[in-house]
Image 1 (spheres, rainbow, N blue to C red):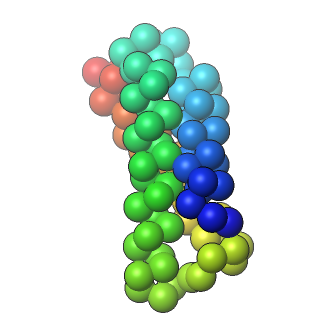
Image 2: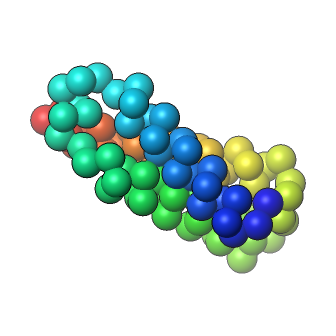
Image 3: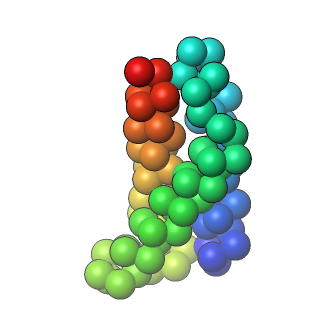
Length: 83
């Protein structure tokens, strides 16, 4: 998966996560901010995995790490916004 694929995957996970949040949390979260931060988290996870040698481009673990990083970002943003 290339860098554009990683950004797209993070953005889709961010959009899905925003849509699945409770309405109270969703009201405090800006859609564009969630999508951008989820995509950035996916890119950081890919970069960290490649730099440490934990996984390489296209491996299944890379997909899992990028998706989990994006989900964690959306979860944290939803928790903060619900306060």
